Image (cartoon, rainbow, N blue to C red; front, side, top):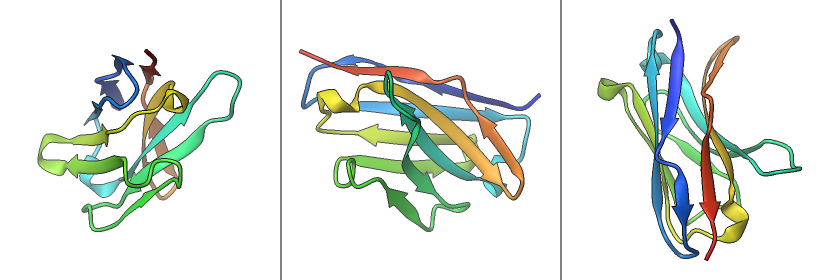
Length: 116
């Protein structure tokens, strides 16, 4: 059974940090590019960061560059999103996505709330 399970979300004050994890099972995770998306209330889902198959390349949305870092540990079948200097506008449900050719898998999402 294919699964992506996100964890690590929560409530944090502005300027704080969180690390999200995305644990994969049921498919060959190392063969999939991994991305983090987020969706805030009333807004469309947006791409936050992407990391290629073996972590050789990363890309970030302009809004998170210099604050967020995406990484992966293929031996653990897990991807991460380190989020620093969090802002209230980072509040959203964060989703993990794994994609390879015509196959795309999604996690259920984890809530991140940045508020004082």
